[in-house]
Image (tube, rainbow, N blue to C red; front, side, top):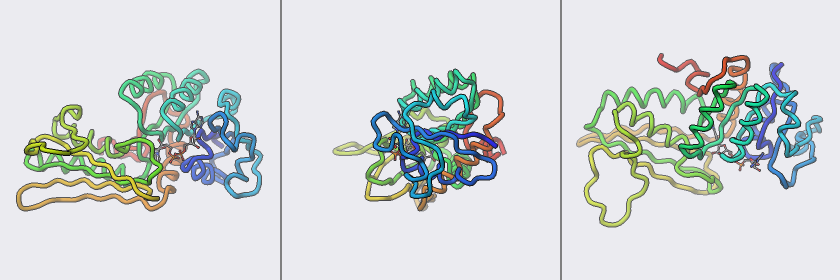
Length: 269
Ligand code: NAD
């Protein structure tokens, strides 16, 4: 059995991941962590999920749980993830990180940490989106600079970061396939007398409304035709199931920073 602790256990994703861990034949849920002051600290996680008690109390201290944990699953906030990864690193355990919204510096910090332990980190754990990332690179390479690239993402009104980590990853993959530097190519908003669209820009636009789980649309357009590739997530379980696959995959791996392309065997295929 792989002993898992979920950080952000009472959050939207943390609850679904915890629910999938309970009763899993290869995973044992041994810990649940929430932020200091959270209303569910001290509660049994089973009860918080609307189930019978499972004997796992939600705490605000990962350090107390790390010894009995094999893999920490973190769907929280960037600052909290960095704090948790330091604890994982010190104890030489493994991690699966789904949190998004990191700065470049924070990502560099995570890369440095993961020289000491195995970590799967992906802004989107769904199988469909990761397959799409691979397809997007192939499409961009074939279409080249003749096609304008625009990305649009739509999420629920409570999402804290923008653009979504997935939209940024899509933009990175396309920019890299086209030999562009995303820092120079990305255009995040348009307003006023902005002039003509430059040939190499990659537009990234965000919509926020109601309870939409997550939608991404990538458009490649040229005179006379356009291709639109759309992914719609209608349930968080698509991400939670991916996180569980990542837990099963990462346990026992050599140190390093991996993503879902590694987990799903899509790297270089
Ligand atoms: P949420 O706000 O519902 O949940 C986050 C939880 O983390 C909250 O319960 C919060 O109290 C908790 N938290 C905050 N600070 C903490 C700390 N220091 N220690 C422990 N817990 C702490 O958000 P969500 O919708 O569950 O999303 C969480 C993150 O996962 C976001 O960054 C989101 O973009 C990302 N996400 C990733 C994927 C993916 O597939 N990778 C899918 C959905 C969401």
